[in-house]
Image (tube, rainbow, N blue to C red):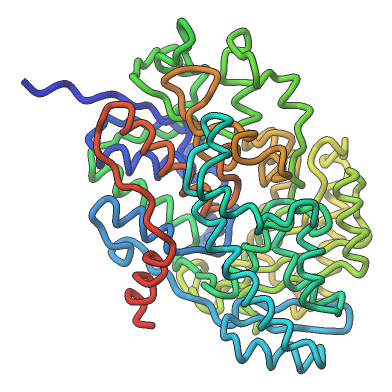
Length: 517
C-alpha cells in the first residue's frame, strides 16, 4: 500500500514560501500555503490601480541562473513561465556634477570609466581578476545549511576563508581598485541591497558588485511580482493549495515540535512539518509561542542589528519620460547620509533616491502612453522613533521637489494620476516587517551562517525557515537558496531523493546557452 503523503504547511506566500511550495509539491508532499494578505508575493507582491502596475519591493533580478535552477528542478523551463530580459546598460549613477553609465560589457565599461574618471579604467581589470575567485569560493558556501557549529569547518568554507576579507569593509576592498570617491561608491552602493552602508558591510560582499557586472541584471516583463506568480502556478500544477486572506494566528507547538497552525478564524490545521516564510522578527513576536522559545526570545531578537528601512513612492503618470530604466541619485554627502540612517537620524534634507522607469521597455505595466514610476529613498528603521504620520506629508513634498529640481522628471507633479506610498511605519504595521527593516536583520559576520536563524529551526522539531531572516540572507537570489536548502532538508528527513546544488559554473554556462550568448 502507498503511504499517505506527508503534509507540509507553508506560512506566508512570499518568494521563499512559494518556491518551497513549488519544490516540495513536486517531490510529492501535500502542501498548503496560508497567506495573510489578499494576494501572494510578500515584499515581492504588487499594487494595481486604474491600469497602473507596481512592484512593491525588488525591481531587478540578479543571479538569474539560481531562478533557472528552481524551474529545472521541477522539470520545467523558466522561459515557459517568465520573460526575463537582460538590461544593458544596467543603470545610471548620478553624483553631484558627474554621471556614470554602468554596463555589463567589460570593455565598454572601461571606456565609460575612463571618460568620467581618467586613468581609472585599469582598476576594472583588477576588480575582475581578484573578485572572480572570491565569488567562486564563496558561492558554494551560500548553498549549504549551517545546522551546527561544526558546519563552519566545511571544506568549502575553509577554502573560502582567505577570501572573506575579515576585518575589512566593502568600501575598503573597492578602495584597492579605484581612487576616485565616486567610483568607489559605484562599486559599493550595492551594500544597500542588504540595507547596509559600504563602510560597515563586510568585505566578502564584494561578490555582489562582481556578480552584477559579470553576470548581469534582468527585468522581468510585467514586474518581478511575476516570479512569485510563476512559483504559485507551478506549485498548483503540482497539487499545492494556496489560500490568501488566511492569516495564521500561531504555530502550534507540542512537546518541542511544530504540529500545525492555528488560523485566525479558529481552525487548527495539522501538519507533519511547517515552513515559516513570515518576517523572522515578526514571527518571534507574533507567531511562535513565546513560552516555548529558548534561544530566539523576543528580548534577544529586539537587540539584534537590523537593516535600514525605505520610503516608497509609486506614481502612475500620464506621460512616459525619456529617462533610463534604473537611475540612482546619490546624496551630496553620501557617507554622512548613511551614517545618519545607521544612527537612526532622519536625513530629511540630504538623501539618495532610486528611480525605476520600467515603462520605457515594459508597456504592460501602465495604460498606453502612461508610465508607472517606482521611487525609493533609504530611511532609518523604526528604532528611529520618527512619527511618519506627522513627518510623511512634508517629506512627500521634499521628494517631489528633489525629482523636479535634480532629475529628468521636471514637471512630475502635474502628471500624477495615481499615487501610493509605503513609509517605514507602513512596512511594520501594515506589512508585518519587524521594525520596518525592509532588508531584514543585518548581515554583519555575527549574524550570518550558523549565527543566523537556521533553515532547520533550532527551537522546534518539524519547523523550517525560509526568507531573508534565515541563511543565506536577504535578497531574491539568497531567498531562493533558502527555499532550496529547507526543501532539501525536509526531503532528506523522509529519505526522499533531492537534487543537490548545481555548481555555479554549470549554472552559468547553461544560462548563457539558454540566452544564446
